[in-house]
View (cartoon, one colour):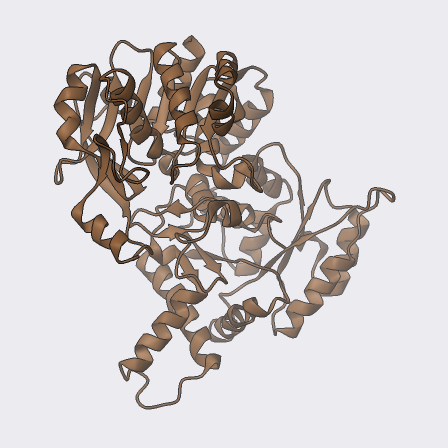
Length: 526
């Protein structure tokens, strides 16, 4: 079922196989007819994770990267929309040689082709493929058929893991395995038998439950893996290894461990558990009234956690709705209680005046500030309004008639907007950035040139560069090809940095992103 933990399970399997000395790659299969995740509301689907080549994908790719340090691209993300789009393209180009094109087997064959392509391109010895959705759903049937056909094609090389939920009715206090038994039977009806069953539950799976599931799916009980709730998702591979998952998987696959080394991961898990001091970070935004802030901003949250752990703290995050500052400006005083302020990415006019009130507070009260994408753009607008005196400064995204378009849109993006050409047309993926030497960000990165991932349509207007720099907001990062502004930094401030890109996509638990690391360090000093 949704949110049961398939993504973390897939990432954890890959981490364990990697620790055994094998080259791995992950693939996420989404059942949506959307070509990518870029046109889906984050509050509906979760964060849009941007890959190195600009693919707008499911947030699970973020976990794959954070757990294994692999670099994900469009090859790692398969949707129903992509598959049908390619099958129809091939049919129109006569690539089926005059044969009629059928949903089965031609759609499953295209799924298999994409899986094989990703495996070969990455020279992976173990490819972990995650299917979104639930066994028994209509939309997952073609992917299950592809999995069945893949097993037929490679009978000794394809294995299945079922991640299933064990409910514990509160009045009984006893785990129930019937939903998992039903899921196994349903999977069997698609021609697939699980080789492992992961039992997701509040507590470790009871031994009698494991034996029951073992009997139902005709598996040894040591392939029924307990997957209880944990304090941190980074504990999951450690928990699995206590169940000897890696050893059992290698045995089933007929492979031997080349090494066994998860020492750094175990040490991180132990460190997280022992931390008792906090750093309080306020995230100011406008998407906080929906289903889940965590899903919408998962990469930002994880990056903050990575940086806090590096600085021997836990990150305490306060979700601050900018619209309440617009309704009652006195409420801005709640920012007194935070150690640092982040404004993450976003779109549209709603709540932006309140966000700029928070940015002004950070600037004037010397509160450490990190602006990501929209957070950088709004920081330059706030500076233009309240330092340069351009009271009507704005972004053309929100005000087409502003006399001071500090943030504007380039010609190519303007055409996309006019033509309503929105899917995968933003400035997406990795771009280089040259850093100004001697600046805070240059010291943080420790290099002259960086590469970071983008997802935006509007840019800083270079017509205001000289004026803003003279007033104290330095332009410290530029794209070498387009001369676009990538980073701004305020002088005479403990930490006030805005970046046009999304550094959160490149943070890792064992390698915190430099900007988040230094931001948290400044917050602790403050």
